[in-house]
Image 1 (tube, helix red, strand yellow):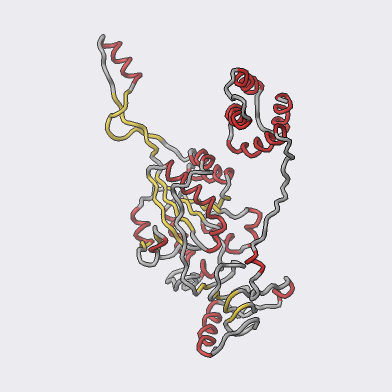
Image 2: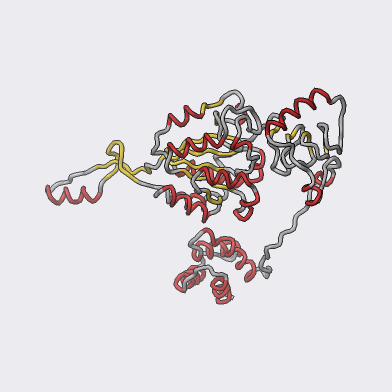
Length: 391
């Protein structure tokens, strides 16, 4: 069975060497694993897996060989929550139906028409194409469809196409103490390290102590400053809305970054960078930081990482007043341009599957604004991003 295990690991492209396999057998023969399968599993994993990216494949092979489990496929099944099926006011349209629904003619026309309809409408509407209501094709309301609409009274985003959200948003802070799943991210982030000795001489310099003692004929203790990572990191996290789909992986990134970098500063934004950012989502409407002040606080040697799916209405990037939540005085794209002009080492990490980037125009726009330096929030993407930041 052990030989089969070794062969299956090699077949699964897990780089296991014969020496590592013999080391495992020696440990088993010495009774290190005891008589429990679980203990043997951890011993085998520690002996044979060198790269944490192979842990999932190792688990599959181990289960297949020792537990009689079938190797998993790419097909996943899941229970659909009942409340998803009970949204009776939600409108579902075919692609052909959607093509027949035209935009109103741009930002100014949409906002002007909203003012008129707010003044004229006197009752609730459902399923229509003009008034503010539910389940229709009007640009104003909830649970319907329009390629450029204003969402009013809807619990969450569905099509990611609203150009204005009329409801106050409450977002959750990222859990900086989350540790589960952060180890591989820490490994990837460690490429972002440049060590230098700074501060008081508090560490024993063994080599120079030996050399000095030999030269002088008596004990000559030499001390030196500790080595610290000198890289300074400024991170901006998109929070809420469509980013709720990616909260777990972003929390892992946030936790890993906080543990790896002594010089780390972070702020939250929503969809695109505007004139203010915040650090506490519970007080985001009262305790804001002026973005200009932030950019003037941290010098140009900081490395900047944006984290967000960049999925929004293009108006948020190109139009003053285009923010989904407030009337911004300047377009979001202008703020992104200012950041890249100040900080030459800037990247954008996108948790959305890279295969879907071309489906959302705003992703391409943001990617261009950061000089093409957008990377997927995967281990390979982190590797590429850290290489770019260290250039």
